[in-house]
Amino acid sequence: MHKIMNVIKHIPSAITAGNLVCGFTAIMIGDFYWSPILLLGCFVFDSLDGLAARALNAQSEFGKQMDSLADVISFGVAPAYLYSLYSPDIENKVFTIATCSLIVIAGTIRLAKFNITPSKPYFMGLPIPANALFYIGVIIAIENNSQFFIDFFSSKVNYVLTPLFFSAMMVSFGLRMFSTKGMTKNWRDNIFQYIMAILAAIITIIFKYEAVSYIVVAYILLSVINTLTSKYWLKISE
Image 1 (cartoon, rainbow, N blue to C red):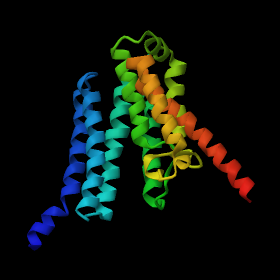
Image 2 (image 1 turned 180 degrees about the vertical axis):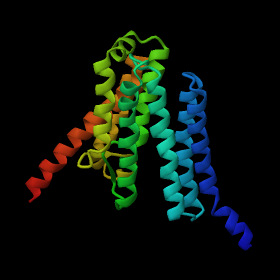
Image 3 (image 1 turned 90 degrees about the horizontal axis):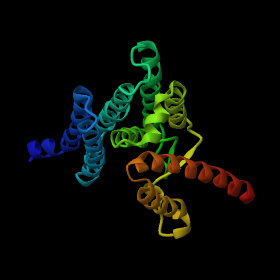
């Protein structure tokens, strides 16, 4: 019985390893078709390991740390590497590395902060998976011949400013990014989640292949509004 329980407690970490393998493979093959699919697989494993840990009562500090380390690879290094392949000045290694390093550094800081912060019903700053989703969206749009995305990221200025902005969002710990874990039975408490779901559907219908990145941008904008309104109502209540 002890051996069975010992095996069970390692199941969440084995699922986390699936996240890590998918992220590493996405980097190794560097393919604009399969790598985004593998990164989407990372999202699946990243969700399942937490569900498995809670279902099996196998939460542990080890599992928490392993999950974050896997996320650095899958949602930090992998998107940064794939983004580097679109560099408008690919021969200038210093330019490309310096730009894409922002994604990895900010993502690592974001995860470190997450690990030492008590659980809240919202995210402090842009979650690293959401940041990764933006870059997956960029790949999907460009590979489906979105002229706007192709032209936008052909500019060296836009190429640098994009990770600068999204990396800043990851380390903006005063920004309240709403999440499904903060939802309650009172619909008024879930208003931003409902608006986000409606916006996501509308954006997908209108923009199709470009939708993924735009949905992440919409999430940031709504979260900024959420942060400002929360502070406003807090002042009124005082």
